[in-house]
Image (cartoon, rainbow, N blue to C red; front, side, top):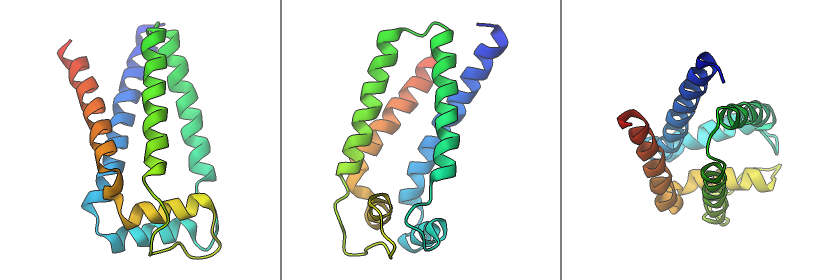
Length: 145
């Protein structure tokens, strides 16, 4: 892989790491009313609200994975990272059963989950702390080495 593509992959992964940490931080920094208003606005009376952003993130994920594998990333470390990430996502979803402050109609499983997360983001606090530790630790190791 060329030096330019390698540099692009590094910058992109570091930016996505910062984005992922900031996204979780908003759960704890913003009061419920502001989080709820943002979710209400995103859904705007619909059952689903993420089709476009999910496709954009999917395309970015494909690009990042291709960059990492093309630059010779260790396959076992890459697969281990996928397992850890997928496990954290699964546990994150399991941390949010239905809550008192329900999503308005029309409802979908994803919409119910979105509203449950806004209701009590601390339910996945340990998972978010572990995720943050992994990201910050990896960034620190990158800059130290």
